[in-house]
Image (cartoon, rainbow, N blue to C red):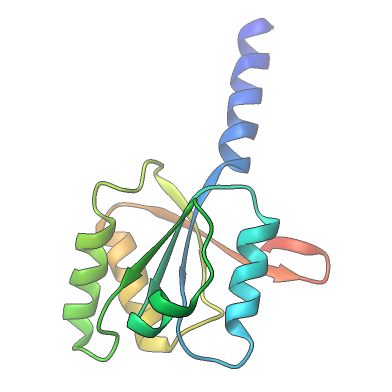
Length: 134
């Protein structure tokens, strides 16, 4: 029973201390959504895919890494840049992802990069009830 308790507690801690990956780009009010998600969530690490403007203007915490890329480049180039910037940094096989901010092509590139990295994803969003899996 002790071993099962230990495994159970470890899995709960692992779920609480997840990695969040999100785009931080365009869309009215989306930066506020991403910021609240970071503040209200219990994340071990947060990676935000953004541009130079986002890197210079987003108020990040110590667990957040801003990855500044040319978001206007070719789709495969964007995917490869995201892949190369995240490779070796994701410790878990499963990450939480938020697509509220950004464009469809940014989301597609991020999804493709995560799949190439072998990461499973859980879509997370801030709702009236708090942070929920979608």
